[in-house]
Amino acid sequence: MEITERVAYLKGLAEGLGLDTESKEGKVIVTMIDILDDIALELQDHQDQILEISDGLDAVSDDLEDVEDLVYEEDEDDLDDDEDEDDEDEDCYATTCPTCEETIYFDESILEDGEVICPNCGEKLEFDISDVEEDDDSDDKE
Ligand SMILES: [Zn+2]
Image (cartoon, rainbow, N blue to C red):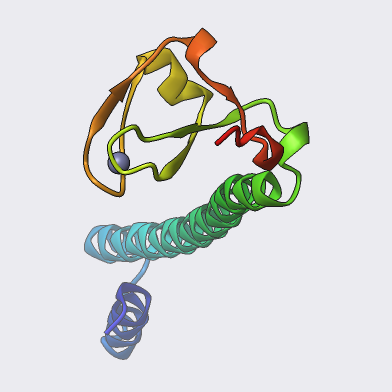
């Protein structure tokens, strides 16, 4: 039973008693019931507010998830664009593995590390920026 319902029940009991509200004892009991009533209502308000805040947080959380999806999707779109517009993206590079001659694609962050692991044969390739050319199919000199 909700606290508000229990207080209402208590009120009914007190009324059934035929309390003399002019007597000292009657005044004390009536005042106590009034206070309980107020507390129950305030408690109910707080619970409602907590539910509202909780719903608000859920909405914010959902929105944040949407934003995260957008951000990650944009990253994926960038990678897709690299394949379509090789010449226009300065952040994508290609080099040829000297061990297995597989063409390896990588971005600027790997260039700053100065090394990349060949995904084909596992060979570690070290280089500096002057060793690599921008990803361009027409660069193949062999
Ligand atoms: Zn290799």
